[in-house]
Image (cartoon, rainbow, N blue to C red; front, side, top):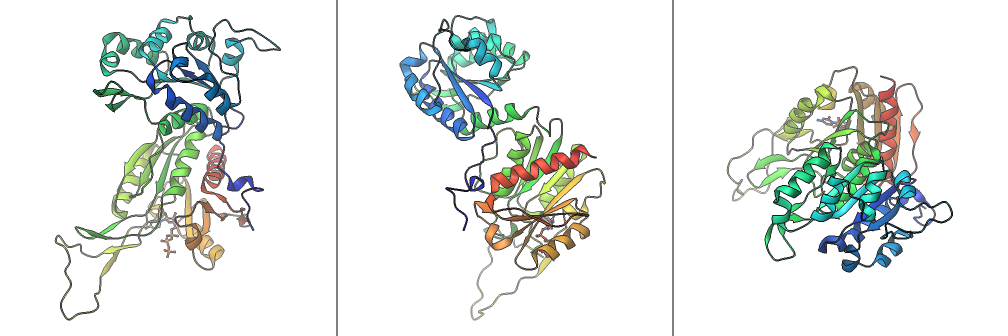
Length: 410
Ligand code: CTP
C-alpha cells in the first residue's frame, strides 16, 4: 500500500532542490505576501535567503522569514563576516535566481542606478544570477516616468519584470500596482532557475484537458479530464528551460506562469492549434483526452424534450486524430494511452498506429481527475517499463527528462 510518510514520490515534487534563491523584500504593504512566496519556494525545495530593506522590516518582521526559510535574514549591508560567510558576496555567488518582491519605486531606482546603500542593491551588484523584479506601489508612482525609465533600464540589462497587476491598491484607489499573484512569482523563479536546463532553446507543445463537443448552446459532450497531467508536463518542461505552448481544453486550472497559452474548446480547435504551433516545435506531448466523436450536427437552439418519447439518439461524427496526423519525422511525439483493459497491448498498438516515439500508458479510471498516476512507458525496441505510483508532478518531471534525452539524439 502506497504511503505518503515513507514514499517521497507521493509527496509534492521539489524541482528547486539544490537551488539557492535570494528573495529581496522592500518596504511596501505587499511585503506580507513575500512570506507566502518564501514558503512556496521552500516547499519546492529551494534554499531561500531573504534580504530586507530597513523599511521592509517595519511591514513584516524578519523572524517570519527566518522561521519559514530556516535561514538567517539579512537586513544590514555591513553585516559581520563569519565562518566563510562574507555577507552579500557569499549570497551573490551562491544564487541561482534573485527575486525582489515586492520591489518599491525606491528599490527599483536603486537597482537601476546601481546604488549599494541597502543589502538588496549591494547583492544585485554582486550577482550573476537572473534578476526578477515584482513591482508593487501606488499607480501614480508606477506610471511616473522615473519609475518607467528605471524599469526599462533594468529590462535592457536582462532583468525580468513581473507585474504589477491592476486592481484595488492599499490607499483604496484603483490602478496598476498590486503585487503579482504569488503563484506567478513562484513560476517566474522556477522558469528562471530552469533557463539553462536540458530543454533550453527547445519549443515544446503540450496538450491538456478534455475537449468539449458542442451539442447545443448550453450542452456539450465531454469527459472528466482535469488537465492536471498536461499542466504538470508544461511546467516540468519549463523547469528544464523549454519554451512551452500549452494547448488546453476547458479546465479549472491556472495556466503555469510563462507558458504560451492557447485555450481551445473542441477537438477540431485543438487540431488546428496543434498544427499552427508545430512548425517551430521540437517535441509534442499529447496528454489531452480528445473526444473521439462529436455530435454530427449541433443545434443553434436548446434541444427540447419531445412529449411522449423516453429515449433520444445522437448521431456522432468522428474527430480527426491529432497526434496521428503529425508526419514530421524530426518531431519527438509522446502520446498517452488511457485504458481500462489490456493496457500494454493497447499502448503498443497506439505507438505503432500513430507513429509515436513514446506512449505513457495509464489506467483511465484511476488516472482521470486523480492527483497520482501509475504509468507504464512504452518505447520502440524496449520492454514496457512500469513506473511506481507517483504524483502527476513527479511523473511530469520524469517525462520531461526523457523528452530531453530523446531530443538530444535527434
Ligand atoms: N489523440 C489524438 N487525437 C484524437 C484522439 C486521441 O491526438 N482524436 C491522442 C491522445 O491525446 C493520446 C493518444 O492519442 O495521446 C491516445 O489517446 P486515446 O484516447 O487513449 O486513444 P484513441 O486513439 O482515442 O483510441 P481509443 O479511444 O479507441 O482507445
